[in-house]
Image: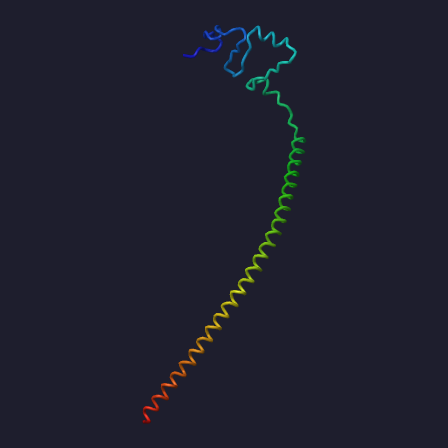
Length: 154
């Protein structure tokens, strides 16, 4: 069972003078001797106000909208400059790509023309061979016809 806040639960009694005691709000309070030493030291101690106290909620500071707007505009200008740099770089890379693509295209076109010429030569040679075979077969048929004609006449 939890001990209600403010009542000693035995833990605080066991702590030495130099120990810190955590409380429910999350802040660590110093023991009495250490608190007086901290106030007398040369470094100032900053007390963070409890954000849930109503006094702090009423003390809202004015927001620096002009400063915010100038920082926002500066960030937009910086982003615009970075975007322009990226676009310039992309444009130069695009030019390189176009040159590469044009070179590749012209190379492919030259290869395509050579392939077409090779196919034309192949077709022309095949046509010549076919023409020679046709002539040969025509001669063979004429020879058979003449041989048959000789056989019929004898």
